[in-house]
Length: 162
Image 1 (cartoon, rainbow, N blue to C red):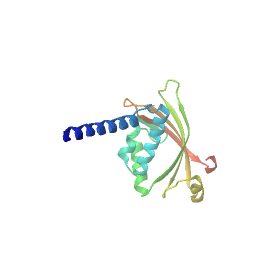
Image 2: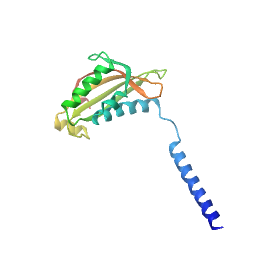
Image 3: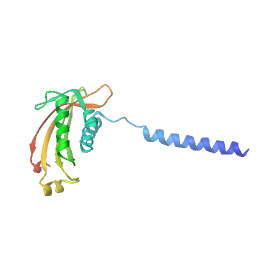
């Protein structure tokens, strides 16, 4: 009798935990815009972690830009940059995300400041006189549902745009 009571309570507890977990995991799947934000944030985190492998996962196999004819060349440049700078901290501000009407492409304008110390505010950037860049980034959704960068163009920007 004692074990049956304990077993019922255990089953009830397991069921309650399962309901809570499924409720927390449920809800609406992330929107395309949220997944685009996730791709930009993930790429920034990979660069800060100095992980070429993780950064490469956010670039489309057909990636190219004005300075790099392909993904491999871009990865070599990123590797060289990481070797020159021990600590890389990025302050990113996504200004706009424009999704194509069919949802099969996105263009993002993101401002990125690269520093050697963590930065948590625009005021800190100004006090550091950090270099700021404007990135215009094109992305496409991959078969796995994640967005990948297909092209990027960048130029210096003034801190006053923030």
